[in-house]
Image 1 (cartoon, rainbow over the protein chains, first blue to last red):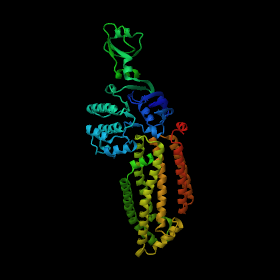
Image 2: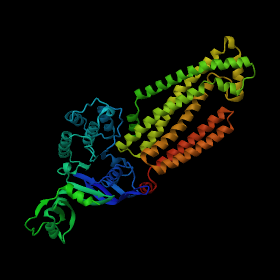
Image 3: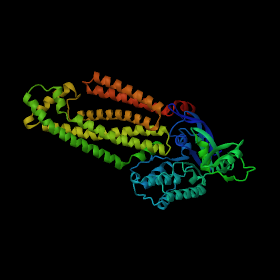
Image 4: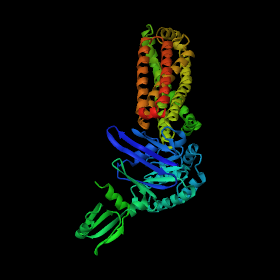
Length: 281
Length: 257
């Protein structure tokens, strides 16, 4: 089976537990959202899969092959990280050529066409780019890399709304063309919600959800109304969390709505609000 | 394959040439300044008209400062290359095996550049010294040669072989420094504690032994160089073996190997 499989993955940084016994499968050909609060373990997971760090225990398989120190498996993965790891004294066009040495499938024409769309100066050195354009340069190289599994760690950092929108559109288009797997680790959940087919939610180093986004959202709903009425309705039901503003309460309930009394409003829960409730202390 | 690619991506001919030229320029300027300063010291020695001692030789030595400058300048270049290469290896998911191999080759390249830069400068300095010891200073050259032979230099010929010997010594020292820095940097940047720490321990031990032996045989430079070269070779082999077999955290290494 094609995909990345994590088996009982645990990572400690000295005494700090970053990831605990995580087991999941990232299927080939899907767009994933890797979600979690700050310090939840998202970057640790990405770095482990990319062989940048090693697990304390557990195993990672890429298309059935153990990924650690395995050149064949690692060639299928490209990671766009928050920090720039490319030589900053190189021009964008040279950086593209440099990455192509390691990723022969990298589509140079596509990279330069995308640079044109983002109005990125390809002759400018990476160190001379603004925060936003530095992210754009990394995004373009990742999208063009031709790898089977492309990880984006905070891809839209420093990007304005227009560029973010352009990135999301290009990602979808590229996905349609290549059918590769895209894993987006981000805090801007609402913006990415429409792209994400599957969500992986990590909290305090533990995997709490790995499901189809649609299923996560259809598994729960929001009930809004007078606090007393909401409490009465949710009694005996599994409540994920709630928000109260004034006398109005919104409760996030698992399951399907049934016998809803008058005065209460039922709506579909957004991925972001569900995420907040799931990961709130 | 990836080792070669990593090196190609990090270094290019233009950058190496710039590095070598800059080193040569720094050394030449520094040596010239030192040489001018040595004139006064030689005058003092002539005035004193006594036997030339090791202290006198040290005073007029124009080689050591140039060598130090060469080592530190190339160290700065090398550090920049090593950091760049490590970061790139992480970005393009190259395994540690290739990274460490490339690091070792880079260390050797940097050391070779130092040697290629330092040897001609040293030869030039020695020849300049010979030329300097004419006219008012005639006869002084042989006096210095004799003194040098009894203390530091292993050959009576102060022009060619002593220059080469100095160069080799500088190169070996440079490789030493690069190996230590490279390993430490590799450890920090790649967070590979197991292998790198062991390599650093071995390196540290080797340096300690090397220095001890050098101290014992300090008066005979050829022995110092041989010992240093021997220790260095053992150290590099040990480091390479460690990298090969322990390029992972101990636990995962067992599973993979």
